[in-house]
Each structure stands twice: as C-alpha cells, then as structure tokens.
Image (cartoon, rainbow, N blue to C red; front, side):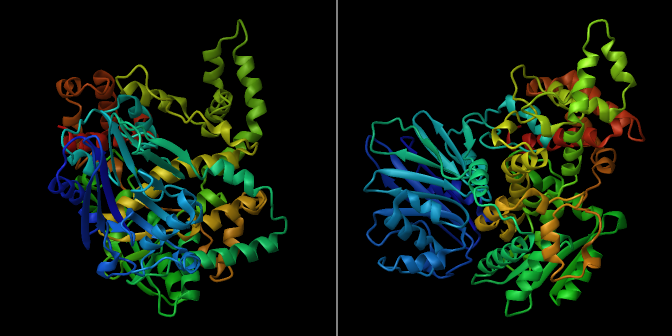
Length: 632
C-alpha cells in the first residue's frame, strides 16, 4: 500500500520537484520514498515516484521505483497482489532479487505482456514503463479499490494516487469544474472519470492507459477496458449455480481463500469488527485460518441507538479474538472535521469518513493491515434501499397509469399530485427508463441543481442504468452501486481514512473470485421474501450464533444537524456571505443563502429538517472547507 505519481513532460521538472510532489502524500507511504527521471526524445522526460508503506518484503529489495534485471522495465506500484505467490511459481525463468509482489508484476509483464493484468488478483494502481516498447502503461484494479488520477495538458502527461501531488507540480491550474458540483452535492462524492479540476480525470476501475512514447508528441493516452462489471456479470451468468447447498459450500471455500490470501504479510494484521454480518464473517474466517489470535478493533458511541460496539464485543468474545474497543466522544469526532480536506483532497461529504478515520487510528497502534467487510451489501443485496427498489418495481405499472391520468387534457395535474400520498407521487414520477432504480424525491434533485450557478451541469442522477441489461431492478441497482457508490464513495472513504494513518485496508469480499462467483448465483440466493444477504447470512451462521448477528443494520453516524446548527453554525454562516459567494462564482448566491438560513431557522422541524436537506447543506459545507483549504 503506497502512493505513486509521475509525468511524461516537456515541462522541466527537477528531481527535487518530483520529490515534493511525491512527499505531498507521505501519509500513504511513511516507510520509504523513491524517485526516478529518464530523458526521452524531443525534449521530453519521464518521472516516476513512490511513497512506500512496507507490507511484503520489508527489505531494501522492495524499494521503488523498481527496475527489471536488465533495466528495460521500471514500475511504481500502489496496492497488493494477493495471488503473487501462485504467479511466481509460473515465472520460474525470471531472476528474482526480492520476495515482493512488485517484482512479480514485472516478471508477469515480461512473460505475458499487457495481458498480465488479467492474471492479477488484487487491489492496485500501478505504472509500468517499457524502454523497448517506448510505452508507459497505467493500470487500476477491477472495482477501483486504489485511486489513480491523470492529466493531459499542452502535450504533457501527469498522474498520481491523489490530487495533492498534481497540485504541487509547477504551474498546475486549479480551475474548478462547475458542471460536476450538483451531482456532488446530491451524492456527496465525485464519481470517475470526473474530478473536481478541469483537465484532471480519474482512471475508471478495470481500465488501463497506454501512452505511446514512440510517436511524435504531443502524446494522447488511449483508455482501454480490461474488466467491466456488466460484462463480467453476463459472462458469469452463462454458468449459473442452481443448487443452494452447492452455492453455500463453494462460496464458503472461495471466501476462505480470499481471507487466507489477505493474511499474507510481513507485518501484524487484524480486522475491523462492527459486529455486522460482513465484518463478523471475515473475522470468523480469519480465526479459522490464522495460527495466532486475530486482533479485532471496533469503536462505540454513547448513543445506544447507534452503538454497535457491544455487538462487536460479543462476537469477538465468541470467536476468541484479541479485541480492542474504544468509545468515541462527539468532541473526538468533531476534532477531525478540519483535517478532512487534507486527506480527502477532493470534495467528499460522506460523514462516516470521520468514524472510519477514528477506527483506523485505533487499529494502527497494533497492526499495519486491517481486513474489512466492504462489498457484502452491494454484491449480496444488503442495503435497505434494495427493499424499496423491489417495491417500486412491483408498483411501476400502476405508477404509469397514475402518471398518464394526471397528464390527460383538462386534468389539474398539480391538484391530483397534491392529493396523492408521497410514495405514490414518487412512483408516478419515475418514468425515465435510464433512471428507474434511482427514484426519490425530485425536489432534492432540483435543489442540488439550483444551488449551482451552471446552466449545463451533468445529470444529478446517473443516466446510464439501462446499460446493465437486466430486468430485475434490485440487481440493476446493485450493479450500478458497484460501479458508482461503492467505488467512488465507500472504497475511496476507506482508502483515505486508513491511509491517513499509514494503515492498509484489505477487503476479502471484493476478491475477484468472490465477485465473479456472486454473479453466478441466482438473485433469490441473495434476496428472498425480504431476507437480504440470504446466502452470506447462512454462511455466517455456520461460525457465529444467529442471535449474535440477527438485528437491524446500524452503521456509523455523525451528529451533523447538531454540529451545523451549533458548533459549526458560525462557519456555515460565513460560507454564505453574499459577496464571498458571488466572488467565488460557483454557486447561486441568493438560493444558497435562503436554503442555509431556512435550514438553520427550521432545525426544530418542518421541511428544512429532513435528512436529505441536511445532506445537501453538509455537502456544501464540506466543499467550502475544501475550497478554503486548497483554493482560497
């Protein structure tokens, strides 16, 4: 787990400047650093740099940038390859100098060329330079566990694991993309391939860039897709699993192998344990496999309605883990608000980032690698929204009739809609075939659009869900979530929160083999009569008593309303100064001022106290914090 950056540029960037770019993400790799610059033709040069978090092969042989035995190939790599030991057995002809997975990637590239990427099972963002082929390749893992930004400007090419190194390079332009702001305000994150800056893109998951250095500049990167969630799903459906017992047996073994691979490291390992199904199952399998007691970590809250620590403790006691828990105060959470922009260097407003940082801070005192349960909800139908999606599909035909009737001539549409229950209005309005599983209160979408001073912004709701070519709305929403919410929110949240403390987070449920096997399972194995994550639960019950797990989903919570109407009120008020907003030139000043004032005044109830209202205001607040940190 590390951070990487580099360039192919005619702009003169010295080794000291490259080190400065690299050191901007020192938190990602506190153990070592390296940089390398190579002259190219036509006045260009190439630079590669890496900050290292030493996990496998802690010796100097794991130093990066790493060169092949003949100096032909150079690599910088962020992540872990979990099947590197199996691959190494196939690469006996390569003269290895280290025991690292990084050198296995080089050897695999020598043997299989660019197709080596299809043999990797892991999380990664990596860059490979091949002198002989006059090429630079950048790769990102299948589901986007590791981030990778890139930029093309004036015939020059730059890349980095985070935005901070790019912002450190000479003459970087901090031009903000207004067209992504409404979507950000609504979803609370910016989704690939977009970024907050003009000209900067995030490489989509399952993709790689080929930069041909042998042609006449300026260079034009070619984006290639080597894995796609839709294609993988339909390919796996060609070999469906039809027997439930077979599914339990085979999925259990695949999960065991995924956990076992993630227990390989030369540093201490543990697990995040919330007491829910996913983290408990991962921990239970780790206990089955590990030869030493498994270390587990959880945080709790004084608010019993949102406190899962007691459940995690009960699971840990049953499994016999070496358990550490701490109760987090509101003051401890509040103290992290100001640090969010530095470590989330792109606007990001999922408030569970704060508890995620705190549990990472707790764990890193004893371990350097933590296994998590991320991915279980998206792959096995765990979120509460999936129940609502199921109901919406059942009511869609009726909703179409209501919508048609309300739009008949001589019918007072507004009066009809006013008399209809809220849920009926939502279903009736849900007519766009590209947005069927993203239904909701259209007023909040409209509010997000009105908040931004931009006439040609992106669709707030993702307009491409029909591309998955599935009729089951639950499944369609799960595939959409894997590609958007999971990748751009959940995984980026965990990456930044853990990397803040130099902690590596590994996700066994997001193993390539687990993902693809889940696609082979019939949907009724995952959801049946309201029973979400059915097969995953039944596997968990093999190791943990049902009564320790069977309870409503809780998750991390942060008292946003209390903060914004209390401790953060003066900051929020300063952010809606009319002169400041107009000078900023990004937001609709009058609309934002009215929205925030309405929110602050009506905190004790009314339309401005709804959860989505709070989300929009918090998204605005975190953007302004980011803007003040990096731009203002």
